[in-house]
Length: 268
Ligand SMILES: [Fe+2]
Image (cartoon, rainbow, N blue to C red; front, side, top):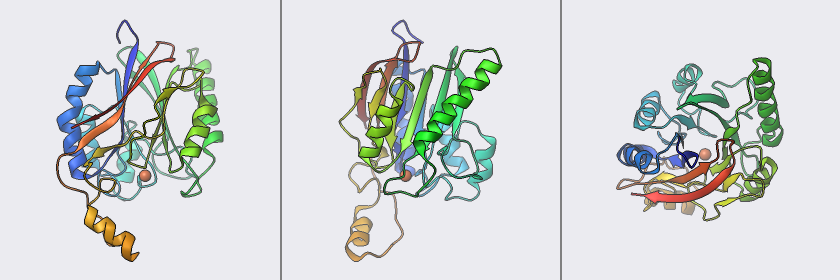
């Protein structure tokens, strides 16, 4: 924590081995440069698709505090039991029960208490449970449990909303304004230039972008993606090779969880 408040880094989807390598190369320097108090990164595409235990361990070792997920989280069957036992790995909270893993976590770090929540959208995606009502329920459950334990509810609240539709992202962003500190969209792998602070001081961006190779089609091999699109045949995808960027946002918050600034970055 610094005099000016608390600093959060949220990183876009880590795509394939090139994305993982970039995370390991770049993230320690970013944490130093920004003086980050907490780091999240979406990991559901680290193993295109899905994520393995080894990928998750590499991300955590590189400095990620919480790994968020999405529609591809469950692709690697062996990851399910790891996710059940590792509270720093999330999957969207609004999957119909029963599903492995957890959708939110309370993290204590550097004398601060953070609540990180992961949700998934429904527009142009699998029709999971309502993200709006799920968010309300998570916040209510966390507040009720804190009050029962005689504690103040956490006010540093970070949300990864894994969704396709910008309209749905903006709708949820305004819905949670003032109740979460940072709203970060993920899933499209394309960083949006709409970072802003909403009226009730929630930092907002529609999509963080990706931690992957920019000279690609959303982090994948261009030739294969073009063939798939052109012929409508599901050729197996492969991650793009080459130098990857780490994309995301740096947000400064007051100790009471109100956004002071949001800055977008893309670092090679
Ligand atoms: Fe996704």
